[in-house]
Image (cartoon, rainbow, N blue to C red; front, side, top):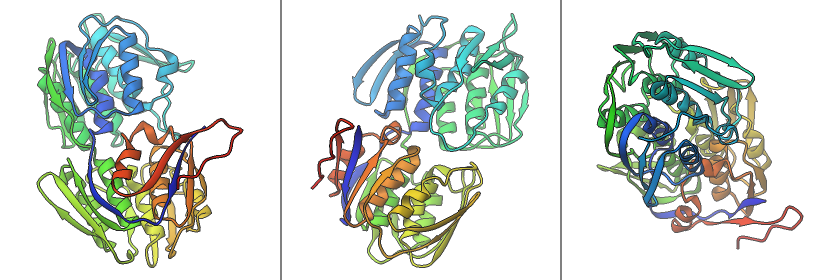
Length: 430
């Protein structure tokens, strides 16, 4: 069994460097399937989700060279028209981007319904709507998504999404890149990683405009060529370290960030009493006094991200007063609250609303990470709590955070990763 053991109560001090954006990388890597030639991609996060996607690409015949821990060369010129491994696909939500990539490259796709974090249903009906709009026949049965383009290829069309969907926006963009004519996505999501995917595809010869607005135009091209690209910094990883400083106290410089991407998180932490100072490509967070209460409602970008909701909840659990979180994206993302309550937090959940009555301290205990961002919240809670915290099911956390142990240790945290047989006791971190 793999666990994190944390001895909390130590303020964080120092400098941390943010890795490449997970949510950009997991779309860009499948999109390399569209490219004839070598893609050199820098700032790729070394996380388990990325390694799974590389395994899928490799199994399809892609040539992959790791030039450094965060720089890859990927050549899909001779990739085979083959079905990705069900076992690999079902372990990662982002595997659905292979539907758009295979449909665009080979004219058809058969991909097992993806897995990933389990915090409520996340249907792919908007993805299917987009693929059908550009001419594909799509069938979902027996646990698979099967999509087939017409004999003369996908045809550009207008896609009006019924709801703002990051995954659908990116998947349709990938599928439409090599289509005939122009595809227009209306009510498109605006997240930074959508802009990053568009910039990557454009660097390889695509013609995409409007990314970052609610209308994106994809003018189909005959082929994509190899090229160079560097993935943007991870907004959510940066926000997680900002929340960690706010919860545990201290003074940390967070490097390799785009401060504009952090506006909604920075504003909320300032409202709660933390000091947030922005530089060109870094942010400094300081917190000495007790945090103040605040309210948060998760919204699509540029609103407060749902992927930061559990982390800010830890800050609220330690703040003075009653805070309220309203979750507008996913129905059941508050499962982690019962874990925080085990530590002494006072959180009451009613469907999509959590009411948090701040307490003066949390106490360490054994916690179970139930998804990626909930796991990150538990790490933050462990850093802020008195005593020892043990976090289990850490494979969720390692899906999205590169070298979290090393980065936190460098900031003065007492945290380590241990592996023990299930029938043995857990050694102390101290």
